[in-house]
Length: 351
Ligand SMILES: Nc1ncnc2c1ncn2[C@@H]1O[C@H](COP(=O)(O)OP(=O)(O)OP(=O)(O)O)[C@@H](O)[C@H]1O
Ligand SMILES: [Mg+2]
Image 1 (cartoon, rainbow, N blue to C red):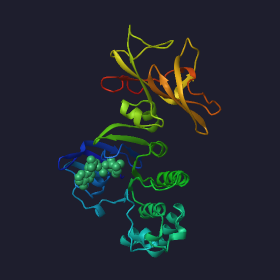
Image 2 (image 1 turned 90 degrees about the vertical axis):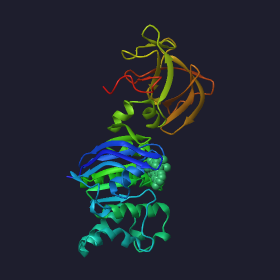
Image 3 (image 1 turned 30 degrees about the horizontal axis):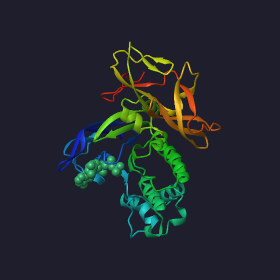
Image 4 (image 1 turned 180 degrees about the vertical axis):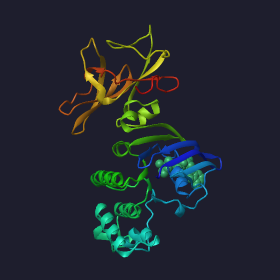
């Protein structure tokens, strides 16, 4: 069992609070993505779990054992750093088998493991080169290969694919997911890229200013954001928010009368995903004025406004509404996220 338990972990760097009494449980074999804007504390949390940084307060348990006082090499985990640190004076092969040699693995196992991870990360042609002779993306794959070679029960990765081109990234992502799932590795994966988090993770934790603001399976996080921050941060394009006012228990939007959850305040935010707006008639929809249409291949992204507020809508690839055109739209049933406009938090939680 290699579950990870973070108990009230707090980290101050002088006057800067990087983590705010953070609690987190990652189950044995789970793939958790850590998502959040720059500076929110992702790397700090990973470094504390790895033992590279000491928390100001709180405990870290791995497999039920308090590792808070243990040095990194005694914690039984592998880490891929954000800056993909590899040993510059060693060949790629020596980098990849380093951990195995350290643990005294026999030659046959080393050979087998190096072959396996080199094939997985497509670095076989570079095994005898030095890191300085590689591109950034190749070096990054060496760092991932080195971490996977030791078959860790816990793997911490900090933006491990950030330097790869889109196609390679997609391929590596799928392969990483299947390898880690098969091995039952408990993984925490830091990324800025919410598509990557959605595609890889069993659950996503969204971090903001040193706190976890929501932790849920990807589909729930996407569909039921608990705050405007999460709705705006997860998903591309971000969730639309229209500021509206309640009158007689309903909100009027064009020809629509929408009923918010019970107990809604007067000022509400109507959260709607760009793909959840369907064509409607003038009487049973609202007007959306087109500013620009961007053909994206699989769909067209239309930017414009409704009631003077910005809005994005995804329409069929064949449709190219012209600037100034007016579309009549209605939100798909059950796809509205109601928020309190004053606090930015959801008015109802996940169904
Ligand atoms: N060694 C340090 N000394 C002082 N402040 C630090 C140190 N390391 C991190 N911080 C601060 O702690 C906060 C969290 O930093 P961290 O590196 O964990 O962010 P991050 O979420 O990984 O960001 P990014 O996405 O840009 O990598 C930031 O405000 C940062 O400036
Ligand atoms: Mg970081």
